[in-house]
Length: 187
Image 1 (cartoon, helix red, strand yellow):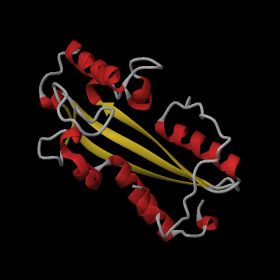
Image 2 (cartoon, helix red, strand yellow; image 1 turned 120 degrees about the horizontal axis):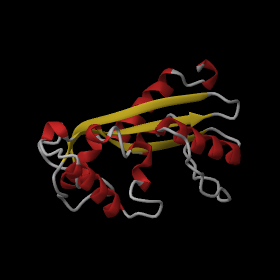
Image 3 (tube, one colour; image 1 turned 90 degrees about the vertical axis):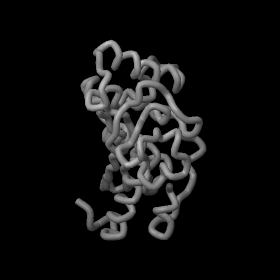
Image 4 (cartoon, helix red, strand yellow; image 1 turned 30 degrees about the horizontal axis):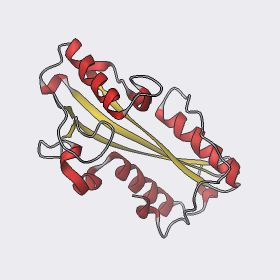
């Protein structure tokens, strides 16, 4: 999906010496900022980063910022997915309208002079009762986007990219960069 930024920015790999960035912000925007700022400082150049979360209404917005670690700090994709399903069952959230959810991605650009640019992408949907499909990763087997014809992201394959939250966030970022190619124009 970074291809939507081609022509607007020159993308380079993350600096080799930069280790993992601790993602301890209380929200997706904060984690995207932490990562962008860390890469920016290490590269001494503008940096792009993102953070993504699954927000389930019946779970009060969880797993949200904890999506990658919902079942614990070293949990597998399957363990995280299973926890979402078991928490919904525990709350008797059985009907589709009780299982409303969304994927949200926040993309952040940080410049060395302190300026930032943020963009978001959201896909609304529901949580399936059981995993379906073999493609994708993470929560894809249980997330049924409203625009997916009843299929989970894992059942969609490459079609997912046209409606994905990351794709939407990167397209919004691309548009914002095209409108403000000089970071000095940003406030």
